[in-house]
Image 1 (cartoon, helix red, strand yellow):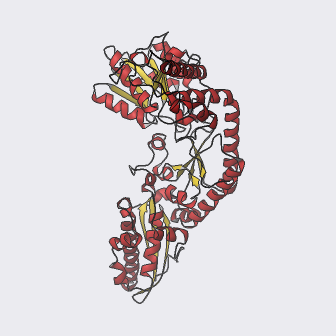
Image 2: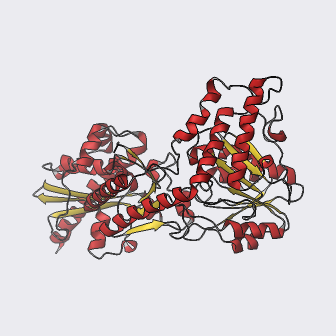
Image 3: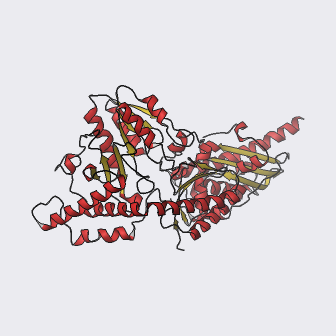
Length: 130
Length: 404
């Protein structure tokens, strides 16, 4: 299978690899996928006010999964939380020229953003309640 | 060292120069039809086919009259299984095979199920092997055929063929073995190993693609087959169609070279595999060998690199031609049925790579490959949330994953 140049670039030079402190109240962590399906993405956001000031990822999966999550962190950094929630998988498919068989990778990246935001919001709600 | 480097010898092999040299005249000057009895062109072609038959018989310890030429193993498998089924179907409708067989066997068995046969699919052990006891336990009154591969194409596990053959012989059941990965790679002897039918392909043993053979035992017992193609009645009525003379010449020459060099080839492949695995295991943790470490094809090393996914690994060593048990590299999006049948979890199946070594593999290539693999695995583990969790002491089986 031939990969697009953008997928190869993200694979060779993944952006924002790493981990944030998952116990911090400013950090939201999303883990989606399953090892037996061949892909797991962990995407984390650090939020100040309503702006995502930092994002990190780690991905177990094919090149397209790595590229999708790498691209996702790049896109959400600096965005408002609500703007990040508006990112759809089709934009990732388009940007990376993913073939139909790899569309699930982009869906997983979208899910990872949403899961990270949901985790962050849950933490915030928990704090307000306390 | 030329890049990319070929490490996929279980998929196919290059044609040996010694084989090609023998084949070439049969394309352009000695191009007769082996069935033409009225002129020298035909005689020369027939003579070449006869020589090939002798060479094949020699490597199998068979008689040349027991060799039927086909287009390759898939056709030979279809001919053996369906041919036996149709010939002996009145005697019984039960067939025994194994879940780790090649798709050519499994799909043929499925086809026969639709035609009224009953098939027992044995589950191999964790190393991918079937035991003679399993066969003995599965044979019934109405069993007419046992089909068990000699060596597995994905993990290289070599089955106890001689013992399985002995059980079949004792119980009066025909024994067919898919020898595609075995012939020319390890010793094969249809007499000592109690085999009634055996197939193999030219391109797996440094011969050409598009040609293979089926060994059909002629005495004790005499095996009869119903032909699967109608036509001129070539190959003693078992396989019609004009003989592929250059291919057949190549197949015979490949067998002659393989028989002569068998010990040397085996020693070389084992040395290459050991050199490779030593380097990998010295540098990386969480690597597992798939298959039977002690009863394995010399040139096959199927490894699972836990916590990294196979397709992304292959991207990491672009200069190495290998294949993966990962779903992502296959058209079906299913992980390897062989690894699944052995009880290797889907998670590790996604992390498996098959490295194949052969006649042309050099130590320099092995060192280069090991280095590339080690670098890629380390890089991808840095990227892997699973590896991170394991480092933190989290048991991955306790996590509620969101499968899709």
